[in-house]
Image 1: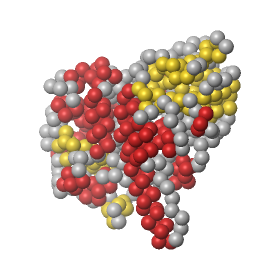
Image 2 (image 1 turned 30 degrees about the horizontal axis):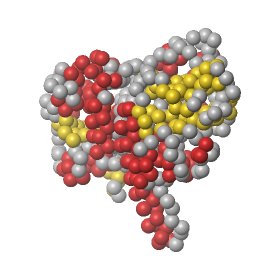
Image 3 (image 1 turned 90 degrees about the vertical axis):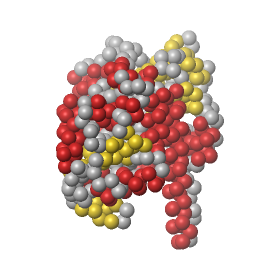
Image 4 (image 1 turned 180 degrees about the horizontal axis):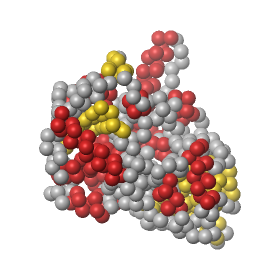
Length: 466
């Protein structure tokens, strides 16, 4: 029998990691970073709870670091077998993993300066740029819909999850003693109301199903309401001359926001504003999105193709890239008429903090929050109405208008999760809820029970046989 062990995303949303063992092979499904509070992230430095030398292959659903971010650590500790993913994910991983390695090395350098002064033992980064370069040689892209042999007794097939570019629902086909069994992992399912990407594909059959539950306890604000408010903010800023700051995550949310700004430009509502994308990582990710427009939904792809080259730049001609530090600093001399998109998405690092320093105290400025803000982050403080913002060594008075647009989400809502899962045939597969906070999983479990499902909530280290 096959054995599956839950090594991550059981007590929360991040740190995705599952080990599938058969008589002939071992597959690691996901290898993500634990993200959140400092004490949570310290778990990333713990030894892997399995023998790396026995892993025959790694399979990834998508590029986000909470699903992929410990792959370079795995490589640093000796892993040298294939890592399977979609083609788009492999390109995004190069961007995300190099950025993560740079941050790991920088943080270790700063910590070691402090430790040297106090005579403490120095630390190593979680992984280095060299580890990432080695990992990149192991990444193998697979097209959506194609069954691929990954070990002697396991095949994989990726189905479009519609979450970010390249995201996949993972189907694993296990053949033992002439019998085929199927494990399905939803990965992160996309919001069917979001822009650019297709809706998650439906699947009808599985023996075991792992399903994410990030928004298992609620639905998103209707997208039309969100876009109407976004349009109103643009019009108001145009009238009073203020700058608009949009803290945004580099992959997914940034490209969606640029697309919606392009639609507003096409409607003639960006006459007085220039749009600046001030994030080298987001710029690189946007260029990857452009190369993979073949996986966009037909409606939004058709909108892009109305422009000359089908690129974001021709759809939104006022878009400017700020790649260098000097170009970023120059934006702080703009008094009005600028829309600045920059990371980090929760305002806890990156170039957005400098733009906040130069704009938060202005009454005609606007800050548009388009993503989830975790407790304890500077972005959450703005959402909660803080009147002082500590940034770059200064306390800045918050006079700008703070807007929270709750409809933007790359994750399926509760209703969308229920709709997706109810495409499965009866008898229902064994169901395990992962990637959710305790309340989200508990609420979703009850909702599923009303619809005839029996859902399990696994704990860390739990093993199942099938």
